[in-house]
Length: 421
Image (tube, rainbow, N blue to C red; front, side):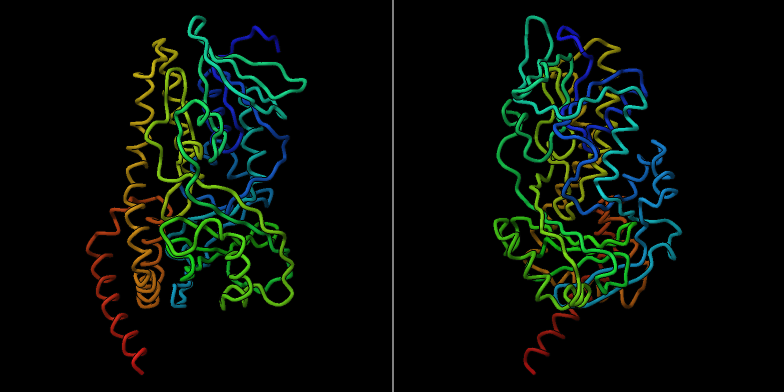
């Protein structure tokens, strides 16, 4: 590639955010350059859960059908919740809705499929390209992306899209994103055939983690993924991730039973999480997409679907920018407005709810208890809200909120009586 070539768009980072944006841009006639610091296939730390909104993008790209056909994704229908006080509810969401709220896909598989689909659409991929810094030349009106020392040459582009993950060293160096990520997550795969878990997926709301949680979910190859999510509102601090991850494996009654005595568990891996959405995800000739912009739900830790939603929005805005020849900060601000309207405002409610549940974990007990009484229909309604298919404000609808409040009152009386006895 000639050093003097000026690309229309350069995307730094080929995760789901970067690759999805590249795909939608190429589909609309703008050929982006995608820079990835590693070589595919490469792993990423994640819970591997793709919810309905993410599935919609995979279907548009022709990947959902391919994943199922090649047995690389596994529908998660049979599962449920273990509440902080150990109330267990498991059900079958597919039996209730005839749709799957979640499909598990290993990131090593799906990230490569996403970027290959973007390349097939026309995108240009450069692997093993580590970015040292980016600079903007006001006179010429383009970005220069400088690689770390090695054989790679600088690249140039009119518009820069930053999709380099939660730490977002590039966006921080530009002063747009400030501060470190607020949360952390862990992940360990458990070898197929060595565990005793007989569901497809379950969320365990350990009292040690609330409002964070841990989860178990089966993969297409029958490996089991075990992950923990720590956010700063609870008792456990992010720096205690290693300890809590292993403590739960050894001492939590549900998890230790699900894993069994012969489980072959890989070494824990960890990753930072930036949640809640950033106040600014744009600048002159620049957009920030996905984890780098904090597009992760503070209550659930879900970010894949929001990264992909924002990637499509970014592509639409960029196409419009080229049509109008307007790449100013003022014009690109509409990107922020659109993703905030789509899902960003919901993050504010998630933050409030996470803070509230940290102080009142009994609401999770009440949900599990009510699900036992009301069955899969009640669980699915909650599941749709928690996974982003419906807005968090739906929690306050009388049909959900009133039974929950009454159940909380009942459980408080029950627990108080048991304590006295």
